[in-house]
Length: 394
Ligand code: MTE
Image (cartoon, rainbow, N blue to C red; front, top):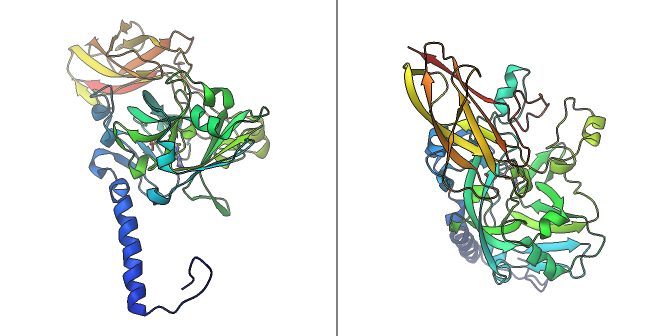
């Protein structure tokens, strides 16, 4: 065995087994709670290796705050097992003082709790297939959730390191190991420095260690993740290990190439397209499943609506039609209207023997609207066409 001072010592095989079991027990205890996966029954897993699951829409719209068990999971690689006691967050790049912070040190900074909706850029991806097949996780409409997030302001962490004046982007890197081409990389992202350092509570990014008041689960990034309100989920890096201040966006695959809107996937197409940052306005019906058999007469339907990810975007209107757009009913927005959060809505529509589909469209006060049809793109991102639910009436 090699000791920490570099010298070697003969240790009996029995002693060795005893020692390794102590290490394993310590690691296992430290990670046991976080490593416990969410109850598989609560999510519909589109893939299990890695874990990609979304809840049933009817469960999702039961409450404005999404219980963690119903919160979608989107991972590109297996959950890394991280020993929180020895965990360090590195802050390097164009900074005055490189930092290596333990969780305890991070938690000494002022704590903030915000409520924010997270949504995957691939939410509703499967709907693109009717035009032309798209690869990737075949998400329905439930890769979205609204939770409370507790942690420290990224701005405060960056202050400890001291940003140099040339810094334009803040890059994040996760501790997971994603197979990408011939090598393995940590999942990464970057955000413009203005977004990173906005200090008004809830506007900038947070480094989060609690979700819905409980320690983060392994699926959601234990022990530390970023949450960037208003941006697609891919910018909220889980299992965060490193922050780098830079004068350019990260070169990590998941921002330099993936998570862009392209029709073709040639090198130039990727190069020319800009990374997606903000999410778009979106809405869905959750109270009725696809192809439900309905009776003629009044029917109350409900769902969610998310305003676009601009700082002051709030939902203006949700409209629902049961006659292919001939007439529209305004839905009632329910519960809190809060920056960077979805809202639930409800409306009673008249179902007739002519009803074939229920349609939903929405707009917000910042000019965001759901288009009749979202242009097809090769990776199936940002699907926010009018939501059209096929039903039959008997
Ligand atoms: N961070 C790491 N390290 N690895 C990942 O695979 N997936 C991203 C983001 N952060 C990912 C990640 C994507 S695409 C989304 S939509 C969100 O995490 C999902 O967060 P959730 O699983 O907590 O819902």
